[in-house]
Image (cartoon, rainbow over all chains, first blue to last red):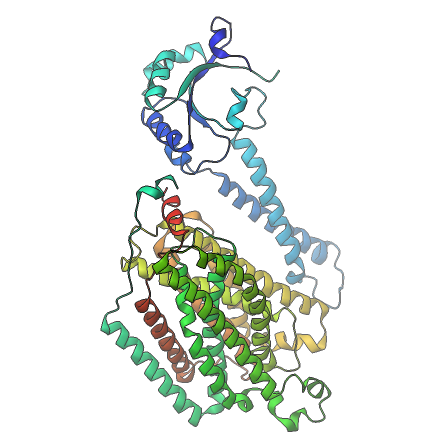
Length: 199
Length: 398
């Protein structure tokens, strides 16, 4: 990991200002102040899930449960249709003298396909909603996956956007201003970080 | 978590019930017991099935409360600390279950075919089972099971109550030690109780899944009753600052899980018998799929499973006091109909509901309510000495 502060004059694009917090409690308090300041883009990095961070960050509920439900129902109906068509329409077979359309025999497969599609769609939906896999952004600091907590106030992605964001209701981003804000919000250490891809 | 040190949890104290409510339950119990005595003397053939039905229903709730509490100790659960005492209160009905088990002795010959020596003689199947299905051995099994539950309730809930004063975590550790022993004994004793009380109504039929089917119903209804009592206490303001919608959410998830579990067990039992189509097994379901019983069977699949399943699926409903309250009442009724469906087809070709069923139900319900009220008036409604309580109250605050 290159030290961002020493490479100010490089041609790297500024990613934002990273503020380190000593514990989850001060992170949550800092997060709600950043949220209330109305920056356009910000995020938190923690080595493990922190209870209450979603609310402090102002995150909305994920639409993932609806994806799971729709795919679960789809799996249920597909399994019913498949079994009905194969065993009662296309190739009726007499099994133990039971009716061709014997729904109790279909239930295990209906259950399995419900669970299968619900489960796979949850994983796929989670990846899609989180824009994973990520190959364009590299971790700012390996310590964030180990023992440190941080908030980033992100810089607008492109230079042209700065004009746009100035017109919007968001608090405009400034490197030193953001650093001061994070320090006031309780950050014990602040550094500017730069965009770095995987390759 | 972090704020736990700076807050003191309010002691909600003991339940204070107006004399009106207490008198209502006394009246219910008195009327119910009177109806039972009249029915016993006037129409014993009709009374005893109703007695077994309600006996088993309330037995499930009483021991279910103990099962719930023990699960919390064994798993060192944190979320349930504010409501565990309410589940413990259900066990105060266990002494009455001992009484009604003894009363059942007088009805054996009216409900259990295998008590009739003339029918057993010459019947190869019943003769083969005569060693197990004998009135004395039957009564010993039932009484021993209830005694096991009473002893564990006395010791473990006694520990929980002593902790209110001392706040000593050693009581939690003790209950965690005794817990697994209870769970093993409970699994065995409740399986035998359901085999004896309900499965032996048809002494020719057998299903190894019957015990777990009854257990699924036990926990389904216990969680529903716990939700009702919890919300009732919340509405009285007893749980102010202790319980919030996160705890209801957890309880709702538990109810949802055991709705699915019941359906899974019920269907597994049905499908294997339906598929194999063995004459000695299918009779049980053929009795229950006659034109007059089919609507009840269909209610179990659609009403007991699909209705709570879809209501409890969205997150908001599990967190809503009102929705949880209504679905819990529905689940309690559904469980009562399930036990009716296990008992009545062995006696009648169509479902019967009369003053005898309702009166017997009221008698049990009145005594159950009185026991729970008495328990909660003697002990604080929250286990205030539980070391997990602060964490549960504040961890769940976000």
